[in-house]
Amino acid sequence: MSEQNTSFETVEAVDKVKGFWEKNNKMIIYLGTAIIIAIAGWIGYQKFILEPNELKANEAIFPAENLFGKMATSGFNKDSVNIVLNGGEVDGTKIMGLLKIMNNNGGTKASNRAAYMAGACYLHIGEFDKAIKYLGDFSGNGADQVQAKAYLMMGHAYAEKNKVDDAMNYYKKAGSVNEKDESATPDALMTYAMYAEANGKEKEAIDTYKKIKEQYPTFVSTGNGDIDKRLARLGEFN
Image 1 (cartoon, helix red, strand yellow):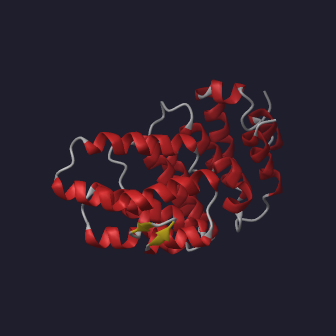
Image 2 (tube, helix red, strand yellow):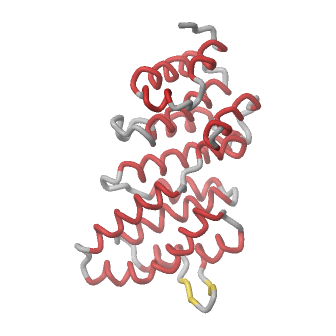
Image 3 (cartoon, helix red, strand yellow):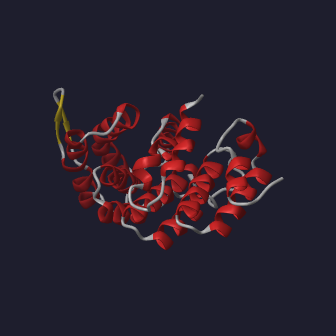
């Protein structure tokens, strides 16, 4: 059984809003290899059009960005998060913190990326208001998967604050950035449906499970989410 299937099953244990993201983060983790590759490709494209101030900001952010990428694949810890946010030194490499980069390079594309990474870092250490602030400052600028992940993270932060309507709003946004995306979009919709179900919003959950089943058959056929089982539990049968 895949890690994703295992994590979908954890929704069975969700009976409270508090802790939803923590209990389900294996399924809705937003910093996997695919998203890092997406960011890297986006960065690579931007490098060809950077003006001098953009180049300077890009050079400044690279060490923090590199450490962030390592955390994204190996796991976040408070010490590394603190260095990424506030600066420090790792293995002889001096790192300028994301907060300083944003302060010194406002309006640049590097500053925009810094907002995304800062928001992700704050989410991981449980500072949800700051996560919401920085993720709200971020703009995907056409990078749909990255934008969807930012909305998804904002949903997680609001869920942890027990703000159900706000959480559902951002989960829904994450699932509507690009409906043609066969990976990020059904994942986001699944999160929305699971969260709705966990909060007693059965109609929203049913409608979304059906939408996933109808519009993303490949996603469903590979065993993601056990849609029929979830619908049956809610009184909907084939």
